[in-house]
Image 1 (cartoon, rainbow, N blue to C red):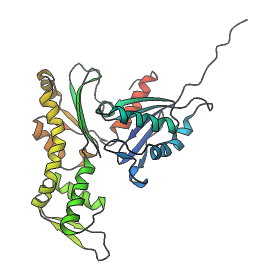
Image 2 (image 1 turned 120 degrees about the vertical axis):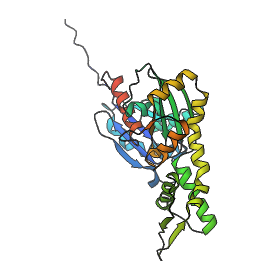
Image 3 (image 1 turned 90 degrees about the horizontal axis):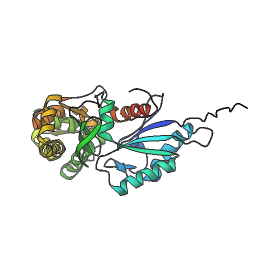
Length: 301
């Protein structure tokens, strides 16, 4: 009798970027689905980590349920997380993903995923540096031969800048800005614009708030310096040989912070190293995770 080999279905791999502002999901062989976190009740993510696991699970469950195989094989999930993820935060993340229907979970450092998504050659024997300025965390890492050699992260990001603006305007002028209004002031402050910043307010009488450049700088400069310090601290503490290689290869800036006018130049001045931005700085994490998932399935990326 000839034995007939049994063929079992391979579980589906789903890449997930759980951002503070947006949730991005990329199942294998499908495009990226993006959902805003701001439209959900409360704050599911805070500082780049899960703050409300129940809400996160409820958001993911309808999507992950589509990728069960024969009702018994739940999807394998690759999820990005900050390099300074604490054990309790890791447990909360795993719990939320398990409750959403994930059968297998692999946590990937976000700078490493960003490097893949940005198209860097991770097999290179020379060090490369990625700086990911997200909504709630700034995370940077030096990568060599596919591995993170050293990293540094701080729970400060784009939302920190907006919240500082909103709090200051409320205290000084008694006005409550929307996130979009605060964003306009942030962009003027990061770019160090010498012009007055006029912000039309969302009020019934259409008021306009005029802020002087020095006022914007006074509010934002401490946060900008804190964001830049994540990268400079990493470089200062890195071995000299790594620093020399980074000077040659440059720095890749990703995340929402890459879209702030002037931040690339500020980072280049602070480090004295050439800084580049990929074509899609917001999507590098989820794209990188998707490519890494394809590599685990034997496909080239």
